[in-house]
Image 1 (cartoon, rainbow, N blue to C red):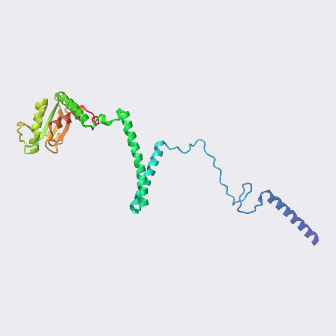
Image 2: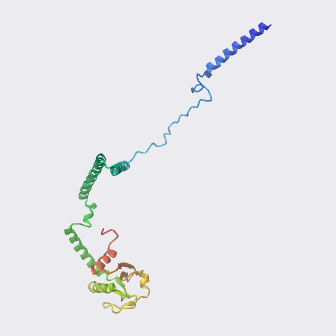
Image 3: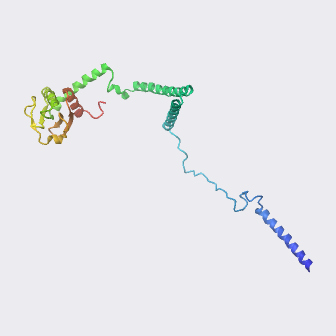
Length: 266
């Protein structure tokens, strides 16, 4: 009986071994627990999921010509600064030569830029600033004569609607110096000058000024002599400035402030 049981146990053991081998051959026969194969199962196996690109998401934006040029210019500038710093801190012939070479290369680029700039200006009169404000002496004289004629011609029209407020003090030497210019302005162009005395005193050219009744506060006078334009129709007030001004200064400022737009003569 014991032999029979032993035979049965051996037979069961062989069957179990056969069954186990069958299971291992079905997907559990790992040569190493650290080897990961997708077809087999083990808790150590950690497969990264595949990421498929999204066709709706745009790729990296290509740089524009301006962006690429800006980066290149910044690279050249930093390289030049680095060579300069090295030449200053370690002024060997080699370091100085490297810095001078880099600087000359950058200056060559600037020279080409300057040359192309003037060629473009010559070919495009609308871009030529000197046509509006010349630097040539002969052209400056022509411009000044033309502008003076326009200023004087406009003064007769301006005198119909505008007057000049002249705020002064009788003890102010600069006010005494300014008064003859304003008197000449009135006599030459027919524009009315309204003298306003802050201290109640008079000037030889304006013996009957008006006393300040708050006009200085309205004009925000901080220093005398002070002149401002006043319109008799719409009561606009336009400051002309403080300090001693010549007749030509006053005429030019009146013309610019009433007949031109900001930036037109620049």
